[in-house]
Amino acid sequence: MTHRFVCAIALALSGAGCAPVVELRPLDSWPDVPGYRLAAYHQIGVGTRELVVVRVAAQPIRRPGRGAPPRAQLDLRIHNLDRAPITFHAAAAALEVQTVDGRQLECGAPAAVGGEPVIEPGATRRLDLEFLLPPGVGLLDVTGVELTWRLDTGAGPFVRSTPFVRSLGPYPGRYPPRGGWVHPWWCDDPWHVHPWTPSTPWTPPAPH
Image 1 (cartoon, rainbow, N blue to C red):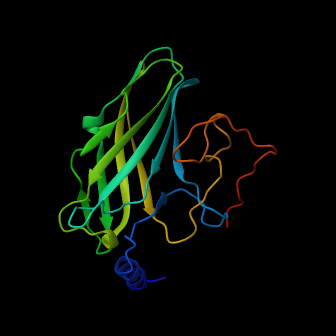
Image 2: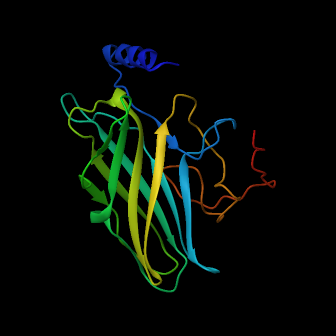
């Protein structure tokens, strides 16, 4: 499906009163598996000491109203496995946008941040980050985004990046993170965290 065809569909929907959106999926998801994974997972530790598990999901990029700039919203679920508190630094979060003409543009600091940045031992917290797309970048220009974020832990600071690419196919995903099931309470649902354990063992797809 070409970019021109995608533009035509989006413009037709816009004319019919439906605002176009840009769906995103993690870069390391598996297109050959029915249904893409909705989130990326990061396991952070030092040696055999596991510190934290972070789930990063990207909601569809949309324009909230006529004349308003497009907005990208990403949410992080942070589960502290350590004995010391963990702090998420919202001021250090940055989003880079990739466009169809090959540009890589920074969005600047988050326009809005929701959630508690300090995660106590054993706790799970959700943080929502909202970024305004750079001036002159429209919804149909976006081919991907990359979120850079930082955590301060009892073992020191950790900086990670999570890339997402534009998804043109079906988006419902119910597949576990790479390497198997991390924790039974992680689920590929961008809105809820609830206990869920697979009834049968899961095996990653064979490489092509």
